[in-house]
Amino acid sequence: MPQNLKIVYYVEPNAAALARRAAEFFVVEAERAVAARGVARIAISGGSTPKAAFRALAEQGEEWRERMPWQKLDLWWVDERCVPPNDADSNYRMTREALLDHVPLKPEQIHRMEGELEPDDAAARYEAELRKSFGPNGAGIPRFDVVQLGMGPDGHTASLFPHTEALRVTDRLVAANYVEAQDMWRVTLTRPVINAARQVFFLIEGAGKAMILNEVWEGPRDEERLPSQFIVPVDGILTLLLDQAAATLLPAPDAQGYGVLERTE
Image 1 (cartoon, rainbow, N blue to C red):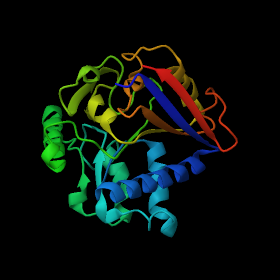
Image 2 (cartoon, rainbow, N blue to C red):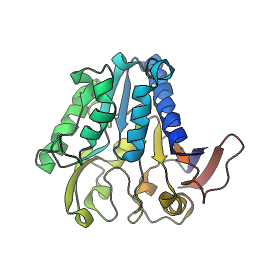
Image 3 (cartoon, rainbow, N blue to C red):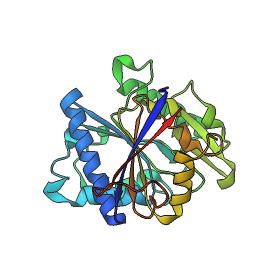
């Protein structure tokens, strides 16, 4: 783990501008990955904010949709609720409706978590698929090109909720996690996998996230209570894409909406 974490953040004036910024971010990072390694492996999260970004990506025509190297993309999920894929709470269903139904991805490029299975079975099957897909280095920790995260009002990210078992899992790639506050099982990538990614970014909007965002990145360490503090990429750089409402309590960015925080881990 790096001694210093550099948090780079970009602030957009509103949710619509944030969705466009996120769509562009996905495209630029995918292009960079394909140029370097011939494939872009991207893991995404659910929620209303990514949904808007996926819609922007699907609808922006030549600006982004036509630039995205779809044929070289492998799409994965950071986490999933233990529900069938057609359930209203399914992250996969949201992504399918907002993005997958509108873009030229083949079934073999789409790696969904099977939330309809028993939680431990779903986690084991996803881990096996990760190891198989990432090839000769599958015995180690796979390195995604991009991992996109959200942050809940309780400081959780992925399905790493406060004081839950999956927070402490470091010997598996994927874990089943029971969230008592929701009386729900979930499946999630573990923090070693998230932190190994070449690019990790949070996509956060709304005034309701301002206080927790400030507490996570500028408050004291309390990772069991604020699991987002576990996210410390191995390269020492974390990116936040924010709207103005969410960024209210962070130090003001420059005139271009760019800011930097640094903290010692």
